[in-house]
Image 1 (cartoon, rainbow, N blue to C red):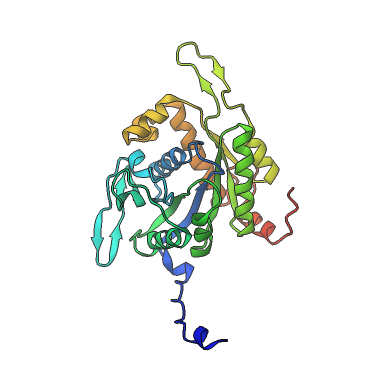
Image 2 (cartoon, rainbow, N blue to C red):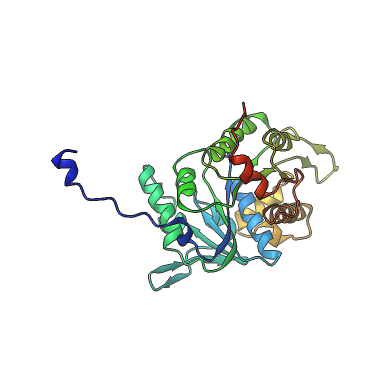
Length: 295
C-alpha cells in the first residue's frame, strides 16, 4: 500500500440493512424491463388496494429521473418533519415519498449512479415510515443503479414484474427478472397490464398488445402469475386526476382486478398459495441456492 493510499480516510460505515426499516414487515419492489407499460399506475392502485384490505402500506417512488407517483396519488409533498426524520405524505391511506417532493416541478434530475444510491438510501434512512405491513417500491424502468442500490440496502421480500402482453415488453421484462435472480431477490410474480381493451359502445374485446404474454413469462420463470389488468381509459383518467381508479370507482372491473392481484400478492407472501403457480417464498428462497439453468 502506498503512503497516499494509507492517508485516504476510511469510507463511512454502511447502515445495517435490517436496521433501516425496523417497522416494515414486507418490502416489495415493482419493476419493469422498459418504460410505458404502466408500472407506476399498477404501483399506485396496488398500494391503495392493499390499504383498502386493511393493511398498513407505504409507497416509495424510487424512479428518481421520472417521479410521477405523487401526481397519480394526488399528494403534493411530505408531511413535515419529526425531529431529524421526514414524514411521508399520505393519500388514500398510503404513505408516500418521492423525489418529486424535493425538486422544482419540470426540473430534470441529472445524476450519476452514486447520487441515485444516496437518494435511495435517504428514502430508507431519513423517512419516518413507522410500522407498515407493506412498503412497495416503484422502481425506474430497466436494470440500473436504483435496482442495485435497493438490493444492497434492505432485505427484500421480493420483486414483481409488470409487463404488457407484447413481445417487445416481455423481452425486456425477462432481463429484469434475471437481474433480480442474480442479486438473490425472490421473484413474487408477474402482472400483465393493458391486457385487452373492451369497447364501451359495442362490448367487443380487442387484444391491442396481444394476450397472455405475462402468463407465459411467469411459466418460463416458474413464478406466480398474479393477474391481468385490462386496458381502459378510466384507469389513465383517474391517475391523471390524482385519484386511483380503486378509489374513484371501486366496483369497476378494473378495480376488482387490482383487488384480486393485491389478494394474490398477500397470499403469495404469506404462503397461502394465492398465486397460480402455488410457489411460496420458502420455495423460492430454496431455489435461489440452486444453480439457475435459464437460457
